[in-house]
Length: 405
Image (cartoon, rainbow, N blue to C red; front, side):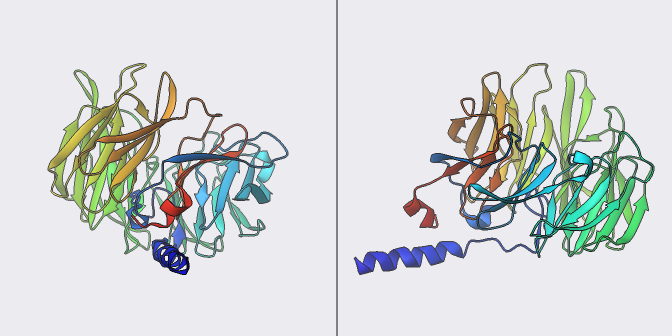
């Protein structure tokens, strides 16, 4: 008996070494936007557990929750609240100004101070205890159709772009460090490298025109720009190991298609690949680029997934009879995504190496969910309810969880 307990203790300690260390908390897997979770192994997806979360009303989740480690999640709900949820309990709730919801997802610094922007354009920070730290307006022109990029935090700097062409960089106390003005709206999801350089797009937001990819230095100055040659940027702009990736859509005789573009950090094109779907999701695990997109036909539920090595050689492609609705989250050997068709939503698990469909799990019989999952350090996939707030967790048995493979 004592030897069994010793083995379990050793395995538990070993599995804990796979925890991520957060210098900051971004969505899409980090400031490089790679959606690479392979450091923690492969995701759990055998057992489905549902936990009701106590609320005074029936407001559900409407933005991607932010995982803060252990059992803590920051969950925005449609009653204009930011909630710290721990297990089945709301620890605190912060009521957003004027009962307004958020324009984009929440980020956090290493001290777990939260940063977000509401519909009025108020840039707000709340500490880990739910107390407001600052409230700064970034929409001085009071534009009614004001939108922002997904915020990005790196080295205690929060960077936000707007549809008015403003790129803003704030410190963690709400002080503007630098700003830059452009003539076009900024693309929705951009990335940074370890040198604090930013890779972002200027978008005309229409097909048949050329968007522009820009590299911005850590002091906010434009370093170089690259026209996209008749492409509309429709995917996140990600970077990995000195290479930049994006996908752009274009009109063709048959409708629309995409080009996947790889560039070096001086924005020289290394390779391009054309695919017959609208690629709106990119992920990278250091060896393989995963490109996921949907067929453009009306009421057509089809997802195409294409993979490439770092030199642009296609490795495999596969199609699913459902439309992709989340980023592709990359584990050690498998990756997962959510997708929808006429029967509802589902989770798809595929192998990294060959694209084989390993498992599907229908969500059509579940209470409505926000369909982008949050990954916890114990490898669970966590979905929150979009009407009534509850947690649906894809997990494993306790013994399987402590075995690190």
